[in-house]
Structure formats: structure tokens, C-alpha cells
Image (tube, rainbow, N blue to C red):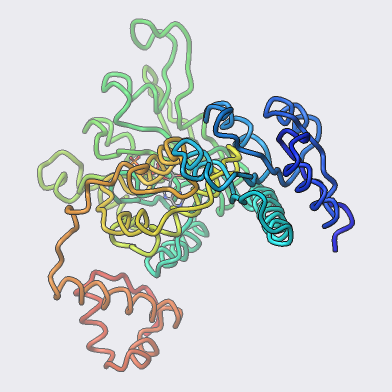
Amino acid sequence: MDAHKPLLFVGDNKQGELQQIANDMRTCGWTVQHASDWDQAGLYLDKQPCEVGLAHLNPKHLPAKTELDELVDGKQTEWIALVDTPALGNCNVQQLIHSLFFAYHTIPGDAARLDSVLDHARAMARLSFSECGQNEQADNEYEMVGSTAIMRQLFADIRKIAAVDAPVLITGESGTGKELTARAIHERSKRAQGPFNAVNCAAIPANLVQSELFGHEKGAFTGANQRKAGHFEATAGGTIFLDEIGDLPLDLQVNLLRFLERHCIQRVGSSQEIPVDVRVLAATHVDLETAVAEKRFREDLYHRLNVLTIKTPPLRERQEDIEVLANFFFHKFRCEKSSRLTGISEQALTIMHQYDWPGNVRELINRMRRAMVMCDSRLIRPADLGLERRKSKRVVVTLEQARDKVEKNTIHTALMRNQNNVSRAAQELGISRVTLYRLLEKHHIPHAGKH
Ligand SMILES: Nc1ncnc2c1ncn2[C@@H]1O[C@H](COP(=O)(O)OP(=O)(O)OP(=O)(O)O)[C@@H](O)[C@H]1O
């Protein structure tokens, strides 16, 4: 038995039954501290954390939920409610227990059972507490999460691409992690000690893009009162991430091409070429091939950029990652806010799997944040995510589409397991090499590996 088990007891200790419970818990080895009301309990916890609290809920003097919220959410204490059996029929009591308490115990009840509930609550408090500590260590602001074959392939590609110093084109829908991928490449590259500069080309007014990227000389244009270095010079020694490259005006695309070929820039208002050591990673969510066909994007620049490419997959194509990401962000936000939530309900997870996620991971993060603010029970429910009415939006897939998806994932996994060796992967899959090559073509799976 633990030598020291502190327990904060909130209630009128002159009431006979409550006094008896406090005494029983002392006998069971708990060091009972008494607080006559929630205010006193709050003051006590401010001075001294306590893993378990036992509080009498009297329906005649119930605190408002908002009053308890702060106390229960802001501290590392699990609370057990003590209630008289008839009080369990009171809606306000039910709601308070449901949203803020770990468990309840009816009075007078069985002391051994209460002791074991308190032990359990204490263990849970410890678990939550240490989990937060671990997350802080393991968590990195730019951590990429994903366990599906397609994401493992992406991580492998990032490692390979980080080892070279060539430009990279990152494509993918909005919110799929293009910038995060760029950061991951930078952090694993020999430029990691240098700056990483993310520039959204679509957010800069067309008439300013040139000077923003390449800088300008004093007097180059009205308002250019002094010489200014652009993003390229400011990123010397590091990596520049040009987001929404498809929106770069055509005349500026020439300058970017010149930089990629000669590693030199020219400031606006100067004909001098300045060498700058920067790696370019570019991203787009538009189809550059179409943009080239429509003459909105230079073909030579497209080919220059299209040597090393990475595609960040949409969330709906990696179903198993939905739960992994949801849990990752649940724990991350819970530690930030020290919330009392214990997890995500089965119904919420089911609806998350059925949903299409047009905004991808960014949308999932936003919905989880919303849910963790709105949720007033212990488990996140569909309504907290704002997804309750979307059940019917289930994407209809044909049997052939479903087969294709499984086929593609299976091939991906086999290739990864066999270090991209096509012969070995084909053998493992029980098909000929020729068939595997045909399937690689069919599913657009890159296979830079051995034969
Ligand atoms: N695999 C992942 N693991 C953890 N977080 C992720 C992952 N992918 C994306 N995110 C997070 O989702 C958010 C959106 O990612 P990011 O900005 O990289 O997307 P994007 O594709 O560049 O979007 P946009 O095209 O709209 O600029 C960020 O907060 C990012 O940290």
C-alpha cells in the first residue's frame, strides 16, 4: 500500500455520513484534507496539487458548472462525486457528474468500493500528468504524423530528397502538409542550421513580388528610399519555400528560372548579378501541367522544377491516419489546456471516417480545437466536431474503386518492405514482375528502386 495518498475532501464535515466516509478513507490509508466549499478547495489546490478530490454534491447548494469548470479544468486533479441516491435523479446533478467528474459514489455506500474508485482516479490522474510531460519532450512543432503506407513512403522520400541540394516541387491539396513537408526536408538537410523562409507568392501584390523576392536598390521605384534585400538574400545558407508558385506572374518566372540555373539574383534597379546560396522548394495546389498548357506557367521553369517531386496525399486517401491524427492533436491540445476530456467517442470516430475532409489536416486540427472547447462531457461527440449532420455525406465508392484502393496500398507496402526492389515485391505479392510494373503504371506509383 502507498504510504501517502492525499485526498481533498469537499463537503460539510459535520454531517454524520460525510464524517464517516472521511474516517473510512483515513482507515484505508488516505491523508484527508478538508475544504468546506469549492472556493476553499481552489485555494488549497493553488498552493498544493492533489491528484484526487472527493466532493459532496448537494442538489440544494449546487455550484454553477462555470464555477467548477475552472477548478476542474485548470488543475491536475480527478474528482469523484459523493451523492445521495435520490439526488442522482436531479438533472443538474447528472449533468455536473457527466461533464466534470471521473466517477460518482452513492452515500452511504461501501468504503472498500470507494477506496478502489479513488485509487483508480489517482492512477488516471498520474497517467494524464505524465502523458503531458512526455508529449512535451517528444513533441516537436513540426512533427509529421502518419502511419499509413502512403505516409511512410512520403517520409522515406523526404529523407532521400533532404540528402541532395536540388529544387523540389511539392504538390497536393490545401492543408495536406506541403509546408510541413518543406520544413521536414530543410530540417533533415545540411542546411538545417540556416534559415527556413516560407513565402506565399499568392499573398504578395503582383507589382511587389519582384522586389519582395529579389530586393531593390535605392530609387529603383517610387517609395524605394533605401536599398533592401529580398527574401532570397535573407535566406542565404538556408531554404526558401515558395508556396503557391503557380500564382507567380509570368515575367517573374523568368527570374526564378535564372536563379535556379545560375544561383544569382538581380535586385530591382540593378543589373549586377549577386550570387546567393539558397535551396528552392516550391509548392502548388494547382495542376502545373494544365497551367503550362494554358500558357500561365513557363514550360522551361516547370521542367526545371519537376525533377524532384513530392505529393502530399489528401486525408480521405489515408483513412487510418484520421484516427492517428485525431488522437495526436487531442493529446496535444489536452496537454496545452490541461482539459478534463478523456478521449474521442466511437460515434465521433465513425463520423470522422465517413467525412471527406476537403480541408485535409488543417480542417481536422480546427475541428479538434473546436470540439475541445465545445465539449461538455468527457468524450468528444460528433456534434462537438460540427459533423453531426454529415452522416449522409458518405462518399459512395464502387467495388472497383474500393479494390483499386486496397491494391494500391498493398503494392505500396510490399515495395516499402522490400526497399523498392520490384522483383522481391512481386514475389511477395505472388505476381510476375511484368504484372507489377503494369500495376505501378496503373496506380501512378513511383518506383525509383532496384529491379
Ligand atoms: N502529417 C501531419 N502531421 C501533423 N500535422 C500536420 C500534418 N500535415 C499537415 N499538418 C498540419 O496541418 C496544417 C496545414 O499544413 P500545411 O500548412 O503544411 O499544409 P499546406 O498543404 O501547405 O496547405 P496550403 O496549401 O493551404 O498552404 C499545419 O498546421 C500542419 O502543421
